Image (cartoon, rainbow, N blue to C red):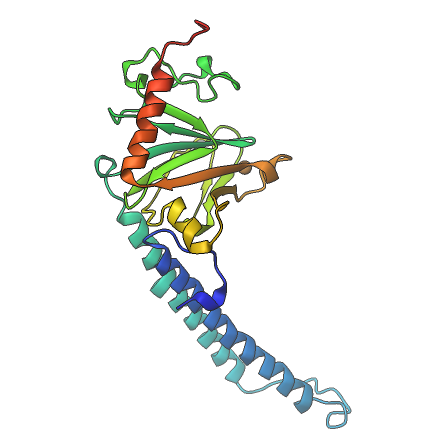
Length: 266
Ligand SMILES: [Cu+2]
């Protein structure tokens, strides 16, 4: 229904509602545009110089323009309270409990996305700033914590299983970033000091999207959507949506690799 907007292809279950809202906003804005355009054309003709050689300092006496202003305010209130706020409230309220979703911590930093999975035990390992090392341990994960044994961290690579509720716990290490994946119709600021949950259900795998678009290079991209510093433009992450089996295979391989003893013994 909203193809006429030329939006990126859709890859989550809730995205249709967002597109519907964007579509309606465009329709209302078109009505406003035509209305105001007609008004300015009317005013140009009605108050042309040949008909009004001398300015009238008394101005308008009727209250019609006041009523029209009120009508505009009412329409805008309906848009806000009738559409925008209920849609957003429903989105936020319906977040599945962590036990029924795949929970992933995503932490923005200048200029990368740190991805952290809890692994099979579904418990995130402890983190400690004292262990933080920008190269080898950008999240300060304490590998001696039993809960951290099966944790998986990646840089800029977010793997997700298709048709599964995903809860992203969004954090930032330094400044405000924004986690935006256009095909998911998801965009949320990451604010230092806060852990902000967002959730969605991806419903098109990367492979299916490549077939659909006829583009074998296609990747879902996490674009940082807040200007966060000099390297903002290269702050890109990639999302790979896989079938549940493929995802489990990837996860198992990562757990095996990352929980293996460090060959350098550090
Ligand atoms: Cu950023």
